[in-house]
Amino acid sequence: MFHDYTLLDLKNHFLYTLVMSPTPFEINPTTFPGAKFMTIANLMNIFLPLLMIGAALLLLVMLLYGGFTLITAGGNPENVAKAQKIMTFAILGLVIVILSFLAVKLITIMFNISVPI
Image (tube, rainbow, N blue to C red; front, side, top):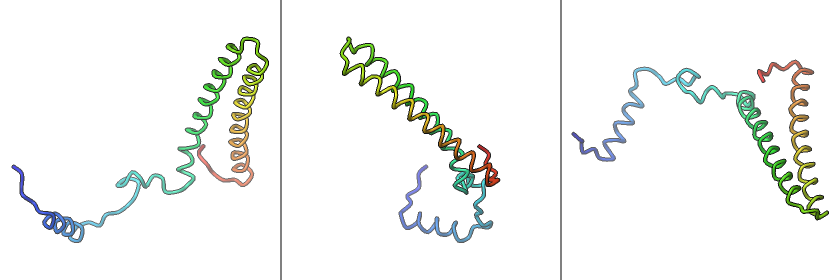
């Protein structure tokens, strides 16, 4: 059944288990999963590939939007120019993302930094 614990009882129980714990709580990757990201490099190794995939998906969406705009332009020179501009900037954005990734790789090679990317 349920016990009628008061807030004071719960607080005292928590403090008792915190103070009277037989073994100290140790933070390491085996006991605390968040400790796997102890350095910024480990965190970046997770987020950079996700950002690259996001950039590729955004390129796909923008190319589809630019193609749709080009198809529905109906010979209007303003809409054709708009569609070409959308597709040009989408490809330019992906080229910038790829060049920045390659620049990071080049810096790690030049300074002999071991990064598991």
